[in-house]
Amino acid sequence: MDVVELLPRLHLLRFPVGQAYLWRDGDDSAGHGELTLIDAGPPGSGAPIAEAVTALGLDPRDVRRIVLTHFHWDHAGGAGEFAALSGAEVLAHRLDAPVVRGEVPGPEPVFEDWERPLHEQALKHLPEGDYVRPRAVTAVSGGDVLDVGGGAHVVHVPGHTPGSIALHLPEHGVLFTGDTVAASPVDGSVIPGVFNLDRGQVLAACGRLADLDADVACFGHGDPALEQAARALRNAARG
Image (cartoon, rainbow, N blue to C red; front, side, top):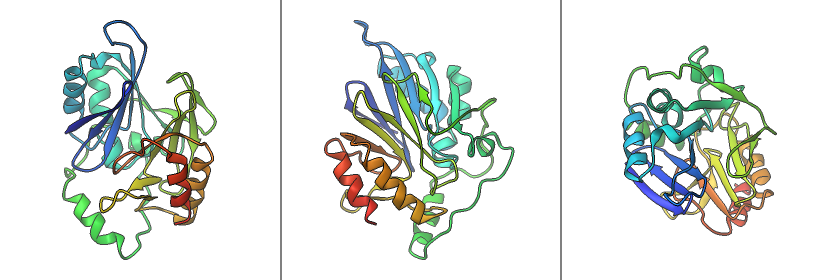
């Protein structure tokens, strides 16, 4: 797993498939503070995340919450493991939370033909079998504001999954998009996410996220946009 500092308060945790983000609040002289994990990687990621947090000179027990942008395994698979290690609360949108808990199966994506080979390739990097489910999942809704980064706004962006969310930190100009938006592995261009339930909804969501005028956008896959993120999101909304 690669760990990349994006901002003094923000690190990217990159897995073989997908990625997560670690946000730090607080300004004490030792560099500690309350931590929030946005997404948690695929199954088996709990211990590596804890090791990465420790390597940064932080304490995994300071991770107060894990905010899941959606239920897919490459983002929610490590949540139960890391929550058990850290005591962190797991949060997901009320429409995806039952899937994260294992109460209902998640709907399958509506694949476009060109997406099928990409999906098959991605599956090769994900472990087979069940993963550790979180003991509890707190349901959130669009419009909720979390005690992160001076107030993190939950934005409901259905289309990738029914309960996909973005997390917007307006005080810092930072936006976590989940898989609604991605960066192309070919040229780094910002594009709508793939493996969706409804591509039309995803394109509309890209436009809504662009209207937030974030400076920095952190995607579920691909390199984040660290400047002029809103402009890149507007381009993605055009499909």
